[in-house]
Amino acid sequence: MRETILDINMNKVKNPGLKVLLITGGAGFIGSNFIRYEIENYDNVVIINIDKLTYAGNLESLKDIEQKYGFSSENQEQRYFFIKGDICDRKLVDSLLSGKYFKDRGIEWGTHDARLMTPDAIINFAAESHVDRSILNAGPFIDTNIKGTQILLEAARTHWQIRNSKPETRSRFIHISTDEVYGSLGKTGKFTEVSPLSPNSPYSASKAAADLVCRSYYKAYSLPVIITRSSNNYGPYQFPEKLIPLMIKNALEGKKLPVYGKGANVRDWIYVEDNCRAIDLVLRKGNLGEIYNIGGGSEIENIKVVKLICDILKTNSRTQNLSPEIEYIVDPRGQAHDFRYALDCSKIKESLDWNSTLGFEERLRKTIDWYLSNRSWVKKVITGEYQEYYKQIYTRNS
Ligand code: NAD
Ligand code: DAU
Image (tube, rainbow, N blue to C red; front, side):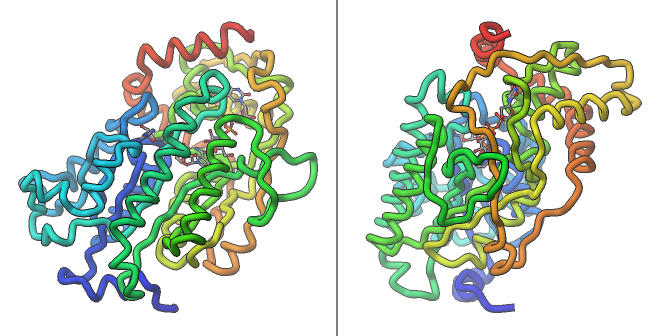
């Protein structure tokens, strides 16, 4: 296996092997899964998680990680530190990248050398992520997804300038983007990494803009940026505003399952752990300045996904008494509703030896099982704000 710059970096630091990752938006769906993936797969990784805790950010999703690895003298391995904060807060972001944040607070990291507690890499998950909300109110999408990303890039540019002049200590800025930046496909074809950007919702437009800002920081300042664009994720800890968890939640509550239009739109589903594995590979072995598509290879019409959820629930001993009912509603996205996404992933498959694990149905079963076993998590993350939002989207359209 070829030695990566990050591997070289590990051998150079005083505490050999220690690597500090700054995760933004780590209390959200993919971020929390990624933190769990990193901390459990690498014992030399330390995570700093900065999250604003919007309606979509929930510390409940990281309770086990906080208990086991959190900053507490009871823990043998102090490898996880949470900061409630906004990526748009330049002062805070600066203090994290310079190490001032921990120094000012006199925080000592167990056996770790405090001077080393500056991030080797930033993995930017923080975003407003829901298309329907972006159509209701685009403002927060522009602020966090574009401005927030630029603030992180600028802070990295400032603080990594010296360190990145030495190739052996090079850092990484991994920006997590989406297949939605390419816009909509018809019945055939796939997007490659060089397909034109043609976003249709304020969400995807803000993500496309952020991708271009990332690209410009690579070109103009040689900032070590890499972008990932993944398809629709599913799995544990997804907020129940997105298709799969919303349908499961509604079925359990005896509510109708609201399908937009005729349910003919197609999404390519990827199990969240497959995406985390891909992001990890990009972090460790990806080439600077590149974009990597990450798709699940499971293209399915929405209505088929919803019917499959109903079938699985009916055969599960815990839910076989349910009789979920589908309701076709007026599409709240209108023309902004992309018909189909599909990704050509040959680049990541060939250059980084990544593949998605097969079996949408099996993974969906696993996901449904998780939601059945974690009903209290769902209850805790649904606040009054969620009920308000639900009314706005679903009551007017049914
Ligand atoms: P999510 O909505 O579940 O989580 C987003 C997290 O970001 C939340 O914890 C939220 O509190 C935090 N956040 C929001 N604004 C912030 C700010 N200003 N400062 C700090 N934290 C902030 O989103 P997700 O589904 O986990 O998506 C994560 C990333 O992956 C996003 O960038 C999204 O665009 C991208 N993505 C998601 C999918 C998907 O299917 N979910 C697919 C492709 C790409
Ligand atoms: O493709 C990647 C994107 O996937 C990410 O960038 C976004 O952050 C993520 O939210 C997701 O976007 P989608 O809009 O594709 O996902 P969502 O789960 O909201 O919707 C999936 C499909 O299901 C879409 O065609 C709309 C439809 N839908 C959704 C909901 C919530 C319904 O029919 N009914 C619903 O209630």
